[in-house]
Image (cartoon, rainbow, N blue to C red; front, top):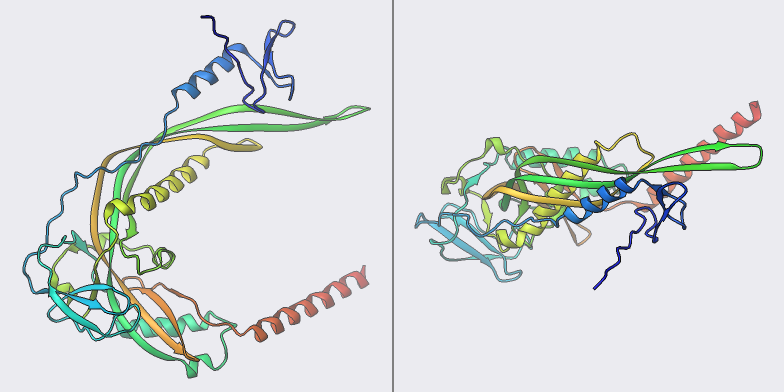
Length: 356
């Protein structure tokens, strides 16, 4: 059987033909011309392209908790499961505020590899909260005085951290655009390029929180944590704090880790594609090797503020003091400021135009 090879234009996707006059392959739709060898190399590279292979496997070993006085606290309201030792002060759930009850010893459960101990105490968290107020110009005037710090709890949040070497190959369709004119017409000349980038990127401690009860955006917002200060897990670090029990295992967390790795590699490699008018990524291939996954407990202060019968939750990095959260805004004050700045801007423009 005879088969016919159809070449398509890399620029517009149209079918292209060989032009005997120019001895090039020419697209009749966008008038782009290609050297035969150039297009052949382009087709070969496309055929060699592979899909991402970002798999972590199931061959990671983790120890289990021994009978070291570790107990589980269960919230009957939200279903949260919190772990601690016998010295953990457990009066209410750090997430919904409902009373928690001590359940059973949880020896045999997966043991964290490392923990980053709390570096800042509850007093530091309150001071950071006052500083946080200062950066909110549209906060209701009576909020600082009338709101109450309903609850503040230190919680070790479960995190999976992913590390690997990523072999990356990316292809970009890039253009260089130039303009020129003659007595009759204006012309636009576009040159197209296939740009290839290859390399290896090392990733260490890519964090993904393993608790569905905590907003991922909150956890990413209070990053980074300094993993150099991590120590081997010991139940003594749980004394006086809660420790959330993960409900999303490392396998369920892989897509989030892969997304962060993909975004980072694309940003790194794209920064090297310079000197072009445009550049669009056409294909990316990421292969992971030397993979490792660790289970960490990371320190977080949860602060619940009550105002006008509503709870506002803020979270603070217990190591660095970085604090985030949503607070109410005085919309009347906001619009007054907008109108005030608009009037000032209009007066400035009036005087500038008047002088001119």
